Amino acid sequence: MTSGHSPLTIQLAATSQRHTIILEGEIDLAGAPELEAVIAGVCAGEPRTIVLDLRKVTFLDSAGVHCLIAANQACCQRGHELQIIPGPANVQRLFELTGTTDFLPFTDGATASADGHSPAAARYRG
Image 1: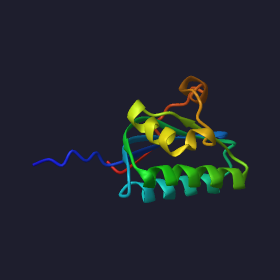
Image 2: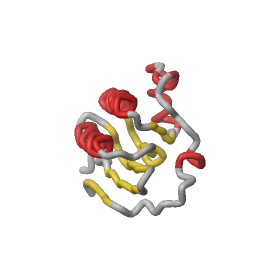
Image 3: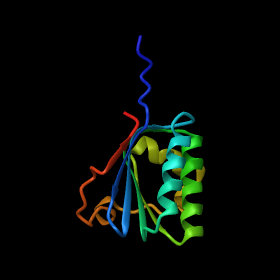
Image 4: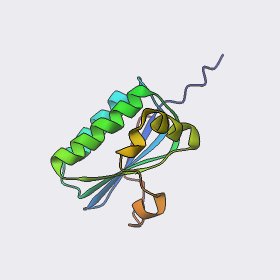
């Protein structure tokens, strides 16, 4: 019997000024701590921009929302620009229900990924 759970996969693509964190699967209570650790590691460096790509996220719960709020706060404190590429409608719906679309820095995917880097640098959890 299959549970249908899609564990979170995290890919990191980096240039000198931009780090893109590409997420796939579920950002839930199980995956949020791993994502928080990756974001903390990226924030410890000196990228000008950090992009969180949610386009392949299949599920998001309150732990995931909290993780993205914390990421926004960490970026603000460290002077990094955070850009969040929206996820599918079911993922974005939770942001709308919680009112976080009003202050999280959602951007359009074309603008956020326009630097032409290859998203092949590192993969976390398979």
